[in-house]
Length: 154
Image (tube, rainbow, N blue to C red):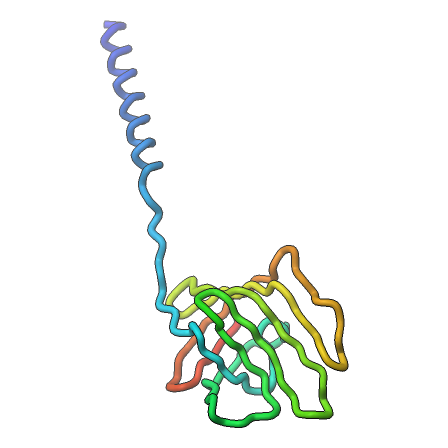
């Protein structure tokens, strides 16, 4: 009788071990959301910078037309599938330029996570590059409206 109990106990332990091994071998599904921002540049209303304006809850973006000549603007450029730069450009007389560099990724089909890696100031407000050992991270929802985007802070 004791031998039967031992046999059942060892069979049970073996079964549990095999189930746990199978779970470890299962691959975690990674969701790849459509990234329609790659290699695009967007003008930002109100001349704000994404990642720099802490109190700003919403950014309205309009697709930049490369043929239009614009002197004063703020923009965000998604340079590839994971890097972005938010920057401003001013005409002569206001020669203080700020650039925010970092990475981004879609964490849902309508949600983007931004990681700010550095802030650069040049011109009359030149300062050493501010680099973050631990990137500043924030998430925004994104909505498309024709040739415009709206980013809302969560």
